[in-house]
Image (cartoon, rainbow, N blue to C red; front, side, top):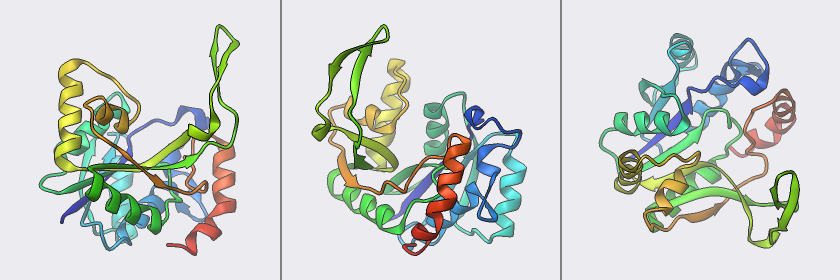
Length: 229
């Protein structure tokens, strides 16, 4: 079984409010994207990595791959205007594989256990997503006022990686392109075709670095996570 990880790192990261792209910001002495790539590089189950980048950062990523000896990166491809377009470009570049994992480049704290678990679940069920139970009360609002309080016991915070049998995720993306459907999440494209997606238990440490506060939190969590990967 051949498994390819697609790392999505083409975003501009405007909420970070930094002149440096968030994927290139230092986290414990290494750029964020390096921590992410090394997590998949060290996973024995991963055969190849496709890194989706912007034209602006392509040269910097190539230099980091060489510097840190990340040998599983088989392709660097340019992203699109949206996450969905970037993921679709990554899928086209993934080549022949059985399982595809899609992961945010700005989630550098992903652990080996979560990567391996989502692979197992994707192979068994066709699709799987790392997620954690919602901690906070979630409400639905309209015009700035609470409309309904949602039942927290049924709510999960979706993370990445999201893993799928290659044929299923490719079918989902082709159908979305054909139908003009947009989604911020891979699972939404798969479930709209009536396909099941298994929830794989994740970790609250697997945060996405979006704001300066997230970078500080990641620094604090890194030591704990590194012991598990």
